[in-house]
Image (cartoon, rainbow, N blue to C red; front, side, top):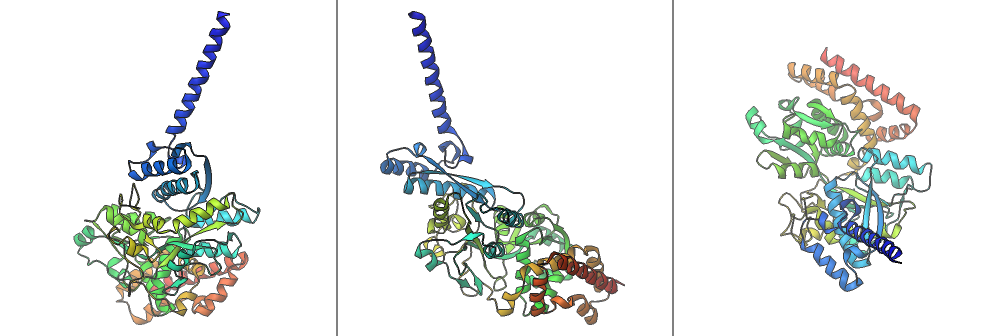
Length: 483
């Protein structure tokens, strides 16, 4: 009898140890599983406070709650993903008695890759097994909405009261409710003040300055067909001019001064810091973060009155795995506390816990509610005179056509563009040659022609013909000027 009892005792002991190890493993598991452990979070009273509230309301600790999963796809960086995941997890645990894990689906690349991936999936299936898409610019969301890939959002009334339908001539949310801006983006440029001073070059203040010959081969830019934010920056430059032809002339002058075209906007924005270029055009997010990290060396400018503020949206995808959880996440992002994460200083109430995010909130009231806690670099886009007011012709510029046109004029014909620019400088920039330099292909010479061409580009065969014609047009024109 002794031996069976001993065996039974050993078995029970092993079972006990296994249960204990599993319990400890559940308590100590780390970050990718959402707010699964205090060990993965910096010490912050908000986590402890959330645990106390959960115990009072649900009779369990924060880490004893059942777990639900949200699947998101986003070009946002890890800092943004982690800050919002942590804050939403605590919020959801208190309000709904469930912990949330977020799976950030990675398909490689930025918004362009994400858009292509989703279009491809939904053309073959009714669901992508992804709940929501977050970030990437309004043009991506317009395309997805037109394809029927986004479903209508259900949000509290205060969100619609604080996020205008349009601002400065730009839609801040979809008229049919399929997407809404979660932040606003402006565009400008970042420069290395120390290197400019060493080179004896006066710092730029406006977009026009970047087209000045003194910045030849000193500007870092990105390929607009690889980066949606780069394409949006080029659109901003064009929109800051009085007309489409003048806007193209301004943009072409800046493109001609490029030292190189990077595959990503982030790589271009890094160039002034490491000395690969002295100036880089970029989205405000890239500029503000980098200048905050090196304030004695890097300066970011969003030219006042020359930059429209555009939405960086969020939306729920068609047939999501967890539609209610997706709705709750969007509602949280659009709440005052969610919006505060974008712009409040690290460690302040409702601010990020690890790293400042340096984005512009889209809710009007956040700028007043958190006025004492905002990062110094944050500007109120709704302040009079801060934003560029778009006119009718500005809004009719086709984003897709512009990015392809930039590719044909400045990337496919990079060497020819540089030779033409150098020849113009040597000849003193004569009026006749400058007029030829700025001349556009006939099928995009006017807004009306551009609109018709955009429709033709939808056909793959026509697109190939048009692109070949554009490449030849610019190649021959640059050769004539250089000769």
